[in-house]
Length: 442
Ligand code: S3P
Image (cartoon, rainbow, N blue to C red; front, side, top):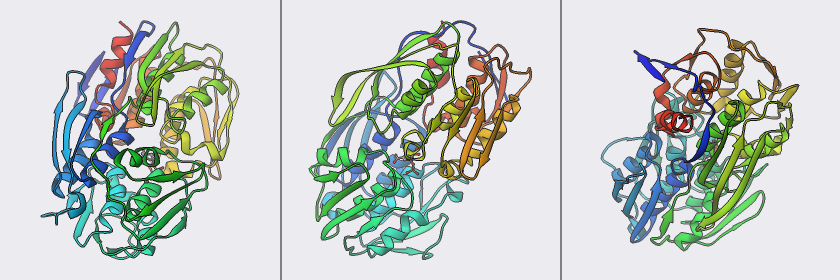
């Protein structure tokens, strides 16, 4: 199915319907938190189901550089499992050099909150994409708590965290961001009193759900979360369920690929993460879920999806965007096959992801001959139910894992091959994506 020439990968059509059951690798957000919270904890945590991908390896490398002992081993299913001994109440060690967070926004932004309370200097940096992403949204509330950064108030990496004694704050976040919320809550654990973060719309709530598993009480509402310090996390046991954001690519592929019916098992059914199933339902797609268990407070289960020939456009309101933020590229591709216009309201956050995903969606859909445009911060897509993909199309992942998978679905679920520049970016979140999807079509 795949031929590579330099940095171009040819993606051929699956050719047959997708059928049967599969698993996806561990959830990326929960894996990062399992690694980072275990590193902060007193004692040895046991973690399993951890995603083995470039992003999570950035978190593992970072906590090692800060003094945590990580002994995770590759399991037969490709996940990582084992022990992490944290620095606990002694705090992180002074790192020897800059900490390279690679492509991972979650690693660097959560680390800022983790390091801010401690009397160390740590320089955080990342790859070219991460160096372009905004950091002031994290450093501003942490500075309000008493942390220092050098250069002060700088938007882009590299940035040096100069930690010290913090005081609690109540902060009204300007955007719905779980990374921002988590950084503030993690710093708040080491401030004397209650730190509260209010957000304009609900963002993913893994931090609020997981910290109590480490013995740190949190309170959480629809748009607010708080923690009371001082609170020292204790070692825990974490099982990471499958990643719904990875499952979304298989689910959307099945919806677009004639004759398909698939089930994705053991996938997180956290309601803050499966908004994409609701968007698909509103487009008329056949998608259903059934809960089979829970890992701590994180529910998991099966998502089933079937080919749906008649999709219709829908409108996704602004308050639902944070719940589908990582799935908008692939949902935009599904919308390109629907009858009528789909509108995603207030998607400006897409401009500051691994790349400018808003511009990339519009450019990529234009290659398909599909009209997509912005009005203010709203994204409009005029679907074409009889979309015929031209021969010889080439897409550029722009080094963005979710764009690489989105554009690969054009070839996989269609009738003609497409080529993708820098397809290897999938390694950031779902290294086995192509093998998994091809296995469903055998
Ligand atoms: C994440 C939060 C989201 C999401 C990212 C992972 C997390 O980012 O897009 O992939 O694990 O907290 P924002 O906080 O910038 O919305």
